[in-house]
Image (cartoon, rainbow, N blue to C red; front, side, top):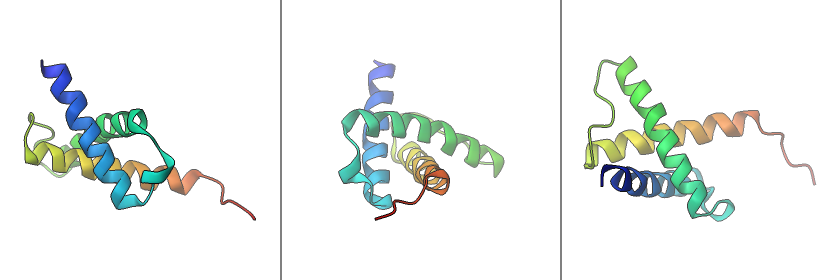
Length: 86
């Protein structure tokens, strides 16, 4: 059951992050899930760096951490993408 909740948290966090970053039209549900899960890991690392706890379960704090990490991840990916010419 914990794995399913982690996937659900990842999907919600990835979707919110894609809405914040303006990439919602470019990615699908699977991308949102992967973005949210990786974002939770990145967000946990960021929060631990500042002396706070990372993802603690299925709650609003963990959702915040995952969204934070996913937005940072989207920003970093955009830095390394080539600009579209045309």
